[in-house]
Length: 465
Image (tube, one colour):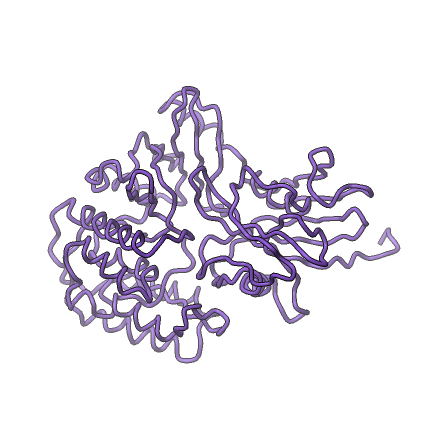
């Protein structure tokens, strides 16, 4: 060891909670107040580990609940970027930043003695003043870096200032870049002409990538690289088939390259329904439109006869393996018993389905009073009720929203569709073991599990895109 003192930096966790805004991704920030470091500056929801018994994901989930009133499932936490930071006073620390796009509850100030405001801000137009350490993490995240160093100098301000920007990005093997590779750029420009700017709007994960591309003459498109050949084939087939019947409510396929697993799509309007709240009457109108959109997709082709074979349950073991750390006593036996009933159920007619029909993939344009749906990479023929599996989580505790969907859809669910296991092959169990993860509306895990099973669900999928 060449030095005389070992580093003993504390570990911080930072929440990058994202939602889709009218002009692009928005991040949740809180303003520090009172007798705390950097009072008056904006900062991410963040905190320290509560001793050696707490891991960093558990700490993030806890801090998010304590500071913002948001309940986050640990399986929805994504590693974003790690920053080695040194303050102007000389103290060093490691900051681990996590991306979260799914939660329960509405963000609100829960600790008014240390926070006096909380709000959503465009990721590319952050407010001032903002803590330089926080800004460094967000800048590194936006640049697509996995790791960064932010060593401030004595005399540097605590708040971010462009003249004192100490951020240094650390490259990694196979680092994701701010723009796609040359082959994908060439493919996209052959389809739509010269592209002058690229914005990475994908989740922080290597399996899938999405960029917003702006053309030299003002056009806007999305360029997507699928995580595997199956998803590429599914999305291309859907956009050339069932999605066409949705008209302007779905993106249009401009070009596809199977070798690159890449597509160029037209941009659609609105903002994602994920993380956004509307007045009850407007919510009912939106959910009625959701039902109408599902009906249009399901009726885009004649239904196929019910298959005589047993429903495919091959995914069950894979999902159980992923969920097992979060299962409570008796959960696995309960899930197996419910999914086992599927083999004895009558098969349902197969129709074109979206496969990932949930608020994150639904966009509402309030000004145009229009609903859009995106992301067809899980689209395939299946029972119509398959598209209500993940959506049912959004209407939980709101029978008026459930009824609005049925009104828009034009019919109620049949007794066969209401049976546990009827979604045929979609069960993906992740019961919550920790009582801190129970819903904030007063219901319990068992209450919600019972409702999910009414729609052929073994629990909402928490591991997917």
